[in-house]
Length: 154
Image (cartoon, rainbow, N blue to C red; front, side, top):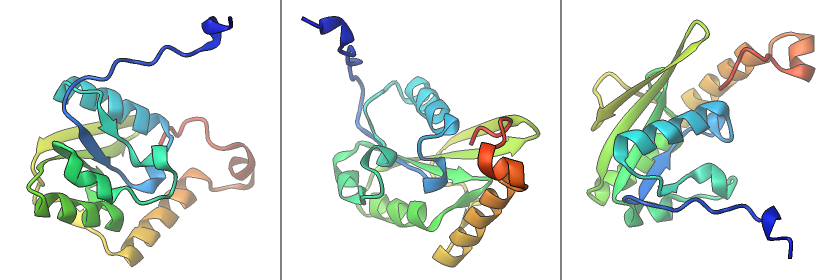
């Protein structure tokens, strides 16, 4: 009766892709842009996106995926992403890296096959420092704390 209210589910195609991303990118404009970019580059919209599962671990889904994409932020893998890369390597998955960085008001995406040598692997402590720096950058100042900074789209 109210069929027009139902969302039409997008048809899934392509190989299963596991997206390993830092939690600071969960449910952001950047995450949506990453998914669009990966759909174009890999010819698939069949993704395991950890943010869809909240804060539950999803690394048990890595063996099911054909492709593993590790997201680096400003040339760094967070400790969570680093841990998931090791699982993907143990299971012989095809691995890609997408490095996300900001240049002025523009967000840059560098997509590469494999794991580039220049990417830094962070410990849990270093990851917390990185997250604190992001929170400080994005939400510095009293007004930004309550209303956010509209220029930032992480």
